[in-house]
Amino acid sequence: MTPPEFSLVIPFYNEEANCKEVITRLVEVLDQHDVDYELVSVNNGSEDHTGMILSHCAESNPRIRIVTVEENQGYGWGIVSGLSQSAGLFVGYVDGDLQISPEDILRVYTHIKEHGEDICKGTRTDRGDGFKRRAISAVYNLFFKLLFQCTVRDVNAKPKVMKHSCYTRLDLQSKDWFIDAELIIKADGFGMRIEEVLVDFKARAEGKSSVHLGSILEFLKNLIIYRMTAGKQHRDVS
Image 1 (cartoon, rainbow, N blue to C red):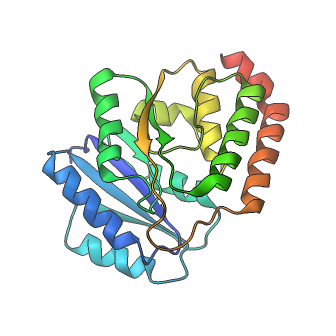
Image 2 (cartoon, rainbow, N blue to C red):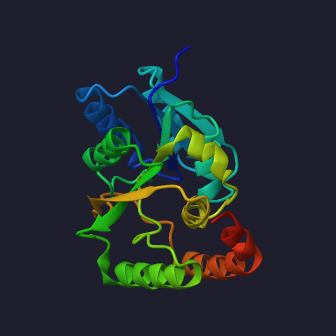
């Protein structure tokens, strides 16, 4: 079976209020633009009806694949589980909460396909998630730049789309929210070309974010630990 051009991983954790609309809108936009794609929908250990809803979506569309993580082990593990099952020439991921529109996801994918960079990612603009979240993000990105001397502006922004060969080389391991930073650090160390595309970042329409104060402290702790333990490796490959 010929692999699709584009595999998009979407992790869902207790997103019963959002997941059907996310899938429906993505299918609509990608079909309208004749994209050869698969949607790898990850039920990341949800405790609500997310899994059942995703299964119903997949029954009527062979482009929708379901990956089930029985017990939630963290955001990153959902991403890694989905990417490991992705066959596309380009693979990527985005959150399953509609804060990034399908149109912007398509723009990021189209950019990497037309311009040939190794990785293309979003950079959030017109953020609708409030001053507090914007301030936290700014502090995190500042710490990231100071520790790793990397020019990427918005580390955690999605979507992130990459060549399948680059994904394989990166060998992502993070089970938690650090996966975005791990991807950028490794890609920068390997000298991969990273491009950023502006995307609108909307407020959540339904449900609530699973990012909390503990997640932020975990971000910063992981940055420092990674810099101390893997910093030499980062410099060696760069």
